[in-house]
Length: 222
Image (cartoon, rainbow, N blue to C red):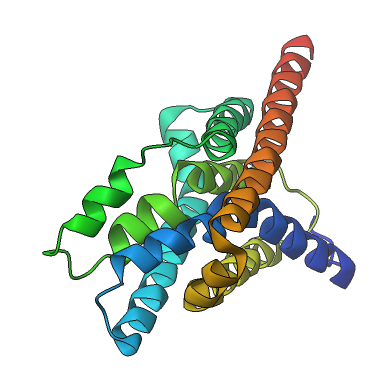
């Protein structure tokens, strides 16, 4: 039997979704790529590209969130397995951000290709904003909500969806302010911010991994 969700619990789920997803989406690291890809666009087109990228990213994560339970059941994936796999992916992305490639060929190639006119879905939405880490987090959230037996499902899902939406609202305004932000922070400041987010991702990934391992052995013992 479901009990009414307390307002504080709803806000807590929204906050956990937002602050758990924001370091993974990491619009700060996408901002330089966004500036590079939209350098030859006018202000209106640049705003539209930023909006489209965030809408696409939101829809990608929403799809994985809502279909996560079906994917889990269809492939026979356990919640523990999702947590371990998600933790490894998130930690790997964190290491890539903490120790970035000194020769990012992807950025150079994308910038030199003048034929690219719409960059909102690829590479901005996927894999930059909604990449493997955020998709794994959405799948893991779906798996955890399978075990939710207290509050109504629609409120729990609503809180997570609101957290995802707020994440991409922040990402949208970050991309709009990218030119000013990068100019203010400079290259070293942007690199420092990216490395800070990378360290946070490593911590989140390790915690996911340990939680998944502990959950797996707990189920085996029981």
